[in-house]
Image 1 (cartoon, rainbow, N blue to C red):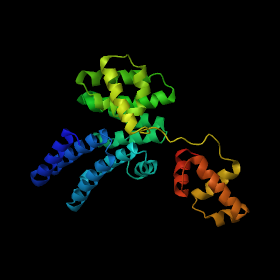
Image 2 (image 1 turned 90 degrees about the vertical axis):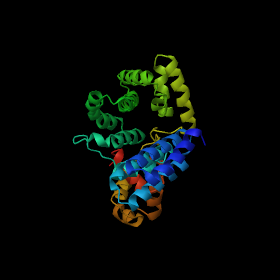
Image 3 (image 1 turned 180 degrees about the horizontal axis):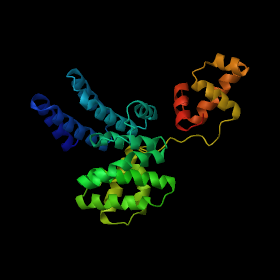
Image 4 (image 1 turned 180 degrees about the vertical axis):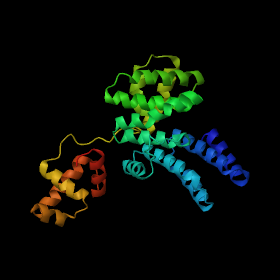
Length: 290
C-alpha cells in the first residue's frame, strides 16, 4: 500500500471521530480514487460500502446519489456492464434540461456510462449543458473531464472536431500538471493521445494512461456485440421476451415447439452478448431493436 493511501487511511480514522460528514466523504473519495489508480478496486469498493453503511445509519441521505455514482465508476473499471446498466436505468440524473451543477459528478458518471453503453450521441447531450458553468466558474478539472468525454464520443462518431476538445483538455491539464485527470481514462484515451502533438506532458500522460489500461483494459469501452444480426423469427421471440412471456407462452403465441423457442432464446442471448433474459430486454431497449 502506498504512503499516500496509508496517510489517507490514518486521516480517515481521525475524521470519523471528530470530523464532519462532508470531510469524511471527501477523504473517502480521495482514498477510493487512490485505490482505483493502483488497481485495488476491491479495497475501493469496501471503503465506499463502509462509508455508505455509516451514512445510512445516520440518515445522511444527501450523500447517497454521489456514493452510488462512485460505486458505478468502480463497476466501470471492473467492466461490470450489468451493474453499470442498472445504475444508468435507475439512478442516473438523465435530465439535461433541468441540470443542477451540484450533481455534476453524477452527470459525468452518466456520460461515462453512456460511453460504455455505446451511445455516444447521448454523451454529448449529457455534458454540453455543463460547458457554460465550467467556463464561467473556471472549473479546470471539470472542464478537462468535459472535453475528454466529448473527444472520446466524437472520435467514436467519426467527428473530426474531437481533436479540438482533446487539445483543450491537454492545454489545461498541462498548465496545472493534472496528469492523472487525463490518464485515468486509460485505454479509452490512448488512441486520442497518440494523435496529439507529442510534448513532454503528453508523453508523461500517455505512459500513465498505459498503466491504467493494463489494470482496466475495458474501462469505458462499449460492449462488443455479435456482428450476426437477429433473424425475423428471433426478433419476434425477443419482443415476447421483452413482454415478460415465458418459453411456453412464446411457443403458444407463435405456434412453435418449446425446443424451437429455447433454441431461439439461446441464439438471441448469444448474439446480444448477454446471459439472462432480463439483460436481453435491457440491451434490446438500449439498441432499439424492438
